[in-house]
Image (spheres, rainbow, N blue to C red):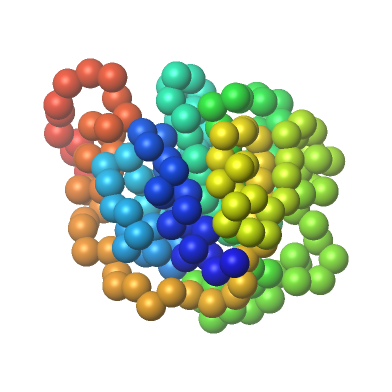
Amino acid sequence: MKRMEAISEVAAAAEKALIVCNIGFPSRELYAAADRPENFYMLGSMGLASSIGLGLALVRPERKVIVLDGDGSVLMNLGALATIAHNALENYLLIILDNCCYGSTGSQPTCTSQRTDLALVARAAGVQQVGTVTTPEGLIDALSGHGVVVARVDPGNADVPLIDITPEHIIDRFMRSFLPFGPFKIQV
């Protein structure tokens, strides 16, 4: 399965779920597939999408939060898996798009291209709900759950344009979709 295909499937099924997406090409691919106010595109901070999504899920337990993260980013912040396990939120789903490489920086191999299995790492960190999928159908089935899903995807980036909205606009509209009260202006 291609990463763009996986991202498109998640976006199509997300409904009103909040989506936090990893930096680089994954964010660009989500933007091209299904831009909407409920998407938060990471434009920096590699390794923090899972933590940002967890924070959102903690403060808005009535909202489903889906995090689309990469294997390289998760490897940079493995401690987040223990925190995800500790909280065990039923409204939080971390989807690790594992293409065995750092796709946004030249496709250098990650440790998952050798011996590291992020599903096993998540289980070892204490995450109770862990799955691995390799097909769009498997990914769609996993979207109703919570915990961690490792989606094996092929290396390669889709030919998609840059995100053409400003970081200020991304955060402003995301906060409007996230907060339960009226309009405001974010000062950055």
